[in-house]
Image (cartoon, rainbow, N blue to C red; front, side, top):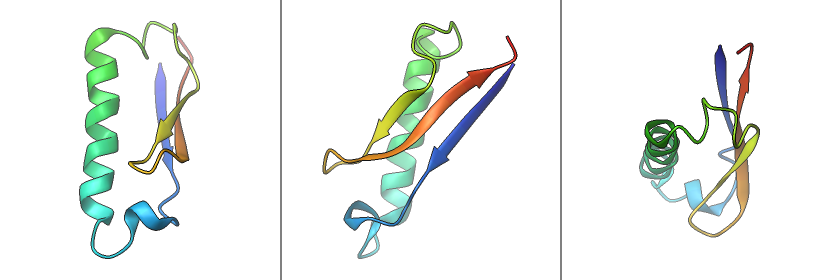
Length: 65
């Protein structure tokens, strides 16, 4: 199985020194989903990652189960 996380850091949520904190928040959200089995189980394959402003900034996909 391969889990791919793609995040575009080109918007306002990542500006003004917030990049690392916002990336950490998004990765923590992915970790929470993994703990619940919401990603690896395939229930929510290809789900969106949303920044603090509500914009879609990336995706998490699972392949090769």
